[in-house]
Length: 573
Ligand code: TEU
Image (cartoon, rainbow, N blue to C red):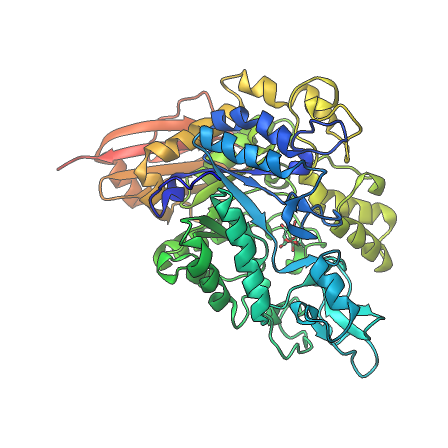
């Protein structure tokens, strides 16, 4: 067993995390899906980016209905990904490179293939029955209430054998665990301890803010959008109590970095989840900035993204979390989201500029940045319009529901091409060889044909690539305390194309200005900033995606998708 290296209690504040979706990362067997050995092969690629922590998404035994987020055995590696020896080798190889491993923990629900659930389903008085959430049918024989699954349809599944419904907030094969049951909490502590003792350095906890449900399980009367029941189980009555228990028994004793994935959460709760005095998580993911293109807040209703809302949400969370002592997990992309490159900028003519602009904009903020595999080489969405290309359970469910609700197959296919989680689940593009170097077999999902132009090998060899732009940003985070501690101040006043902000300390100011449009944009700094520029002892352009070496002045003209990060040092007087 590898021992945990000694670290300060907040070592992760200067770190950058690389998210690995193993199924699509690197296949070493020819079966067409990625595996742990493939990740080991590519550790130097990740190390050279400057990454500190690798977040490995689920590789546990699973029927793969939700690509591993349906766990059937929390203690064993699914043979599709390799063996426990492979996992141990990964831990060893990361430590050899002074890198850390964060693994995904999915304990809001388990797979219905899990031993616990099979026991629970066998009879009403089975000792495992209360590991899950069972309720009698409503008077009409239907589901106990009107809660909806996040993947479409009712959140309840009927079990003929025992005549009751069980709760499934996600897929019908993902049964919600009953955290009210102390035995469930003990099981979770046990499995977390098992992985911590194997040398894991941290956990990403899947939809962990959903584990405490309102025990009355009331119908949602629809008065509070979206009216699907989420208000009765999101950031629920005992959630902080449960998380504190995990922190006390596992996170603190093993000095682990932890990030809670918070579905539909609030700033107030995330301050509580991530303020160190609360002893809960190191940091939190929230998704409010990634709903600015949801019409009426509905994921499957499209609208062009609202730039002003994007900036105000990012600013609200920067300012609010700083004020409350919380800590943000910073991200544009993950395995559930279409690429920001396609969603918010131009993944065609201005693909490189856009990818670098998004990177600079995010990495200048306060928090721990997450780089999702492929983001660092500017992978765009595939824009498929044939539903047969898609694999994601949520996508396939919603395609059917869209058509049931009156959309034509073409309309439904277009909505899916914009929203599907598969947009970010295409295999990593390693080089310009066959199948982009991902597999020698038949890939589980189509590979983006653009791999001849967009691939990791070409970018590691090009000093001006998106990959090296990320590397420089990650390096800056390690060198500049202002990126960790600087107070966030938004500088643009609802500018139609520019997002500008500063990070400020008593002696320095770091400024980021990004143009999110195809238009050249003129940006005038606020008076107080211009005055501070006037007294600056030095001004340094730290990084930019433009060749124009733009001089920082009270008024700057920014090229399409141009982005700049300057460091200003004040006069000592
Ligand atoms: O995601 C939860 C989550 O918030 C998203 O899945 C979102 O609810 C969904 O895309 C509907 O918009 C986590 C994992 O990241 C995801 O991959 C899993 O499918 C899900 O939990 C269930 O474990």
